[in-house]
Length: 347
Picture 1 (cartoon, one colour):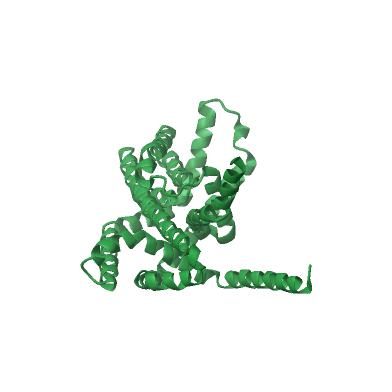
Picture 2 (cartoon, rainbow, N blue to C red; picture 1 turned 60 degrees about the horizontal axis):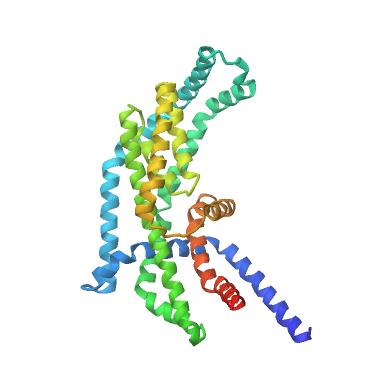
């Protein structure tokens, strides 16, 4: 290896490390840009038909206005009863925990189960949890307030998405000018395929969350459950988290059913959520998602775990779109070369 090659290799390594350091330091900006890009890809199909009659800026503005009106209507309809249910749930949390412990003990006596099934450690855990319930509730309230104080971040994402949609062609042309001429058509195809996949994924996930939330709400009402709006909202939000989200959405409903109703109702609620999951897997996902992502369950799981480990809940939510985009890039680069070599070898 010559001195020039050593120097070039050293420069590449240093630039890579510098790029990784800058990405880490600017991760909040990078996340905002990524969310804006995904949001823009999701609403692009709504903008294009309007752009046939209106200017691009006006078309984007009309879509934004429609989304704002829709969000305002939904908030006006559910925010008051939702706030009341959240407040009531926070107040009764210690009582619910105590009732849960008592009913577990009743089940032990009824079915002649050994008393040590509810171990002293678990009893201590329930006691500590009951004592900490007010502070936990305060933490939930702080998270909720933090969400509303994050309006500025949402506005930043909306502005970034607006300018991306407005200047997309110019920006795309600038990027493609950096690519060798013979590769530009494929580079354009990669960008368009990524946008199509991300947009389809986001729209599909939102529709799935809405469907699961509505079905959960109706089912919980039929069981006479309290806090139906809260639990339906938890189920809808949980649906946005791949694989583990439905479990996260079901557990609070089962616990509250056990504490406020009976163990039979809790079993019924568990069966309800299992049924919802089956309907989702066998009907809703094939109809709504239409294989928009194209990732295996193992890939999704690894991506979600890695995203959660790096960036918490935001990382878990962004993991699948990022993995899907990486899959598109690899399909057109590394995997395509491997397929070409394999086909050449067979020939």
